[in-house]
Length: 271
Image 1 (cartoon, rainbow, N blue to C red):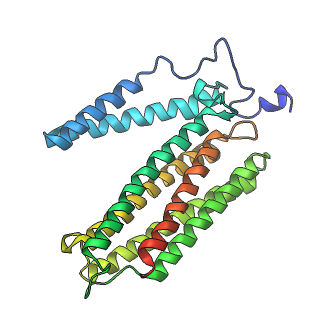
Image 2 (image 1 turned 180 degrees about the vertical axis):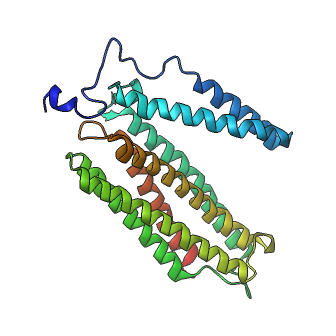
Image 3 (image 1 turned 120 degrees about the horizontal axis):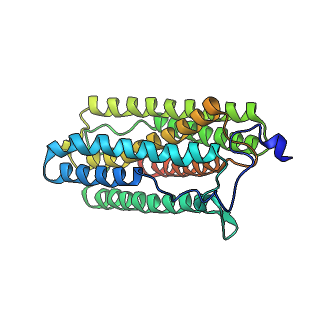
C-alpha cells in the first residue's frame, strides 16, 4: 500500500526517528496518576477523606495518559518505543502477556485458597447451603468462549483491512461480555437469596472472592473493548498496519475465558 493510500487513514503513514520519539515524553499525566495512587492509598489505609482527592485525580491521570498514548500518538503516526519490535514481537504485546502472567498468579493463589478450604472446611457447598447453578456456570463459560471467538475474528479481519467484519466481531464480543455479567449477577442473587452470603462461612466467602475477582477482570476487559470501539467507530482507527490494541485485548479476553473454564470445572461442577 502506497503512502498516499495510507495517509487517508488516521495514524498512517507512521513516523519513526526524528520527531517521532513518542512515549515516554513530556506528559503531565504520569504525575497525576502517581498523586492519585498516593491519595487513594492514603484514603484506603488511614484517612478515608483522602479518597475524595485520590480517586478523581487518578481517573483524570489515567484518562489523559490513555488518550495521549492510544489516540493522539496514533493519529500523528508516532510509533512509540513500547510499540516497536522486541524479540520478534511488538513490545506492547509482550507487556500484555506479562500482565496476564501476573493475573494468572493471582488466580492461582485464589484457587489454592479454594482447594485448601474445601479440604479442611468442606464439603463445598456445606449441608443446607445452596451451591452455584451448574447450568448458569455453563452458560457463562459459553458466553466468554463466544466473546473470545468473536474478538479473534475481528482481529483476524482488521489484519486484512476488512472493517465490517472487524466491527461485527468487536460488537459481538462486547455483547457477549455484558451478557456474561448479567448471568453472573443472576447467579449471585440466587445464592444470596438461598442464604449463601460471605459472612456465612468459608464456602460462600471463597466463592464470592474468586468469582467476584474474575468479574472485576471482565469489567476491565469491557473497558479495553470500549476504548477500541471508540477508536474504531468514533475515530476510524486501526488497520492491517496498526492494530496492536486489538491484538493485546484479544489476548486478555482469551485469558478471561481460560479462567472461566477453570472456575466452571473446579467450582461449579459437583465433587
